Length: 488
Image (cartoon, rainbow, N blue to C red; front, side, top):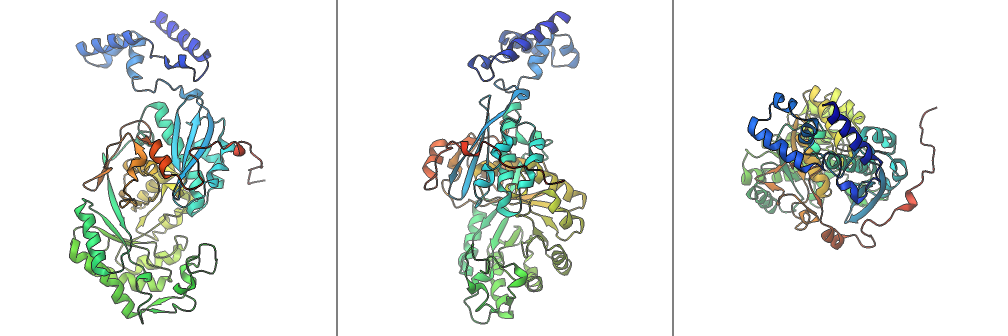
């Protein structure tokens, strides 16, 4: 045994001195003795893989077996980040982190986010070991914020988990503590349709596709052009404009400051949508509602009570997530579950909502919350207070499948949003996983290393946003130019 150990240590020393990433390193530690491994499996087949049997074998055989799934092209302790690049399709910047061993990790910078939220972090992660994910997160977390401004930190974090899974040869869920479920339930988003009957037919179509949980967008935009449905809609209300740059526009005005009110006729018209859908899909399918519009919490209580007969699964983002006290008033005034959080960054910003039980369900998006581990931490903390977690997602298939892993690893998970059902080429952006992703309303958790899929480069190149290049060099972001410490 002593001679075998010395032999192993000498071989490790010889290989470690070789240039990292060289073709010679494809014959990595424990990979070379293929005859030894075959010998081990023959012995194991004869006597079973008992602990006693393993202890009787030479150490090379034992280690060859116990590391049989480790990525042979990776030596995780010697991994270093060498580059980070972006390839943007539509409103989603795809992110790729490169290493000195040819392994890469994939993420995205959330839908609608600016790629520079991620690029500014490049100088802060170059040269780091990508497997030290929490250490790297600690150095960049100060640059994340709510909404799309969390997309940079979150995108880097998510790509690091994909990379670490590939380095160790295990699926992402395993690195998050293992899985509670083999399949993850999907709730399907359904954008607004003006006519209530057509809306109901579209929702029924989702059920016919196999989805077992639905969400619909029923907002005051559907009724604003009908007489006597809203008070104060003009001149300073929903008619003010939808610019994303004008701070005085309707979309940029927080709910409590529009002073838009819904009338009894408006309530009747809004509720008609839910009534028609329930007629079509029945009451056994969970049905959530989102995108109500910008009104104060008193109006939302009125609206929520009007929806109560239709057994709504949850009412989403009635008011901004930051208004914890107002959320608590809403939650305590109605019987329908409340939910928020898709634009909140970091676990610490969920604490008030959870600890005060201001909502019935939390709803992080890994693309804003800080990534996969932050999302699991939020779910685990909510579990301590008997609060469930649904997950928001509206970005690339890369992070969709990564979020499937986070959902599988979190006990109090309820449902994951699928926002790209009507996009015929969305799944074509990736390879390496069974399609369609969703079968009978569920996604099977991948067992391949990391997230479990790769980009279909030809398809991504076809879909690149005008003026964008496919993972073009980003050398301008290589050097740090600031003192980042935030304390004295």
